[in-house]
Length: 273
Image (cartoon, rainbow, N blue to C red; front, side, top):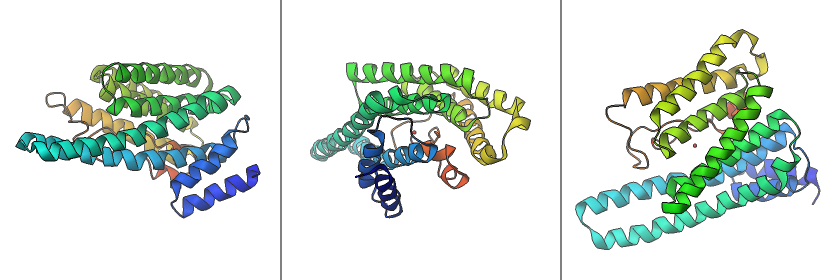
């Protein structure tokens, strides 16, 4: 199948909300070992985000139910729920490992522009973070270390090649700060990173291009929302993974494409990236 047909079928699959097929078509495009266009990059990102997002939401719900049943002492149900949760975790791991392989083998080595490099390293950080959300012990530490490394690599390029108001740079800061808060349990660093990104963007708001204005201001609002949440919950930290309490918002990868895509920025279904 040619690249044009694969892109067309990916768009068709997106309209039909058949995201697994969207992923398969965009993997064909990603395997061409070239720097993808902005449209192709966003299609790939949207495809994986939807596939992983559904499972992450399921995992949160099941984990919340498991905790409730445990507190009631319903051991027989807890055993069933645990097996079901592990099934979801296996699906999550498979999806994350799949996109991480595509990133390492094809997308990152082929990235030419600073924008692409930041986008893909951020994506790598995101999917290692998703692994760290449910992993335990050494596996969690390994995923967290790799996520931190990828976010740092993205930040290094972003600070030299992208303006503070660029949606991809802002989205990186948003997700990196969520990583500090949720995975490393470092609220001070999370707040510092989010506030710095917000302040830097505010200082250069007059240089913001019309085409990215909506995307950038949306992500800035999410940074502000998280700062409000984190500073107000210092005395009583948000319960993550419970499916019940407020959780940080993170940037949707498609937020850099267009206002319509930006409008779907992930809000972390009250426990979430």
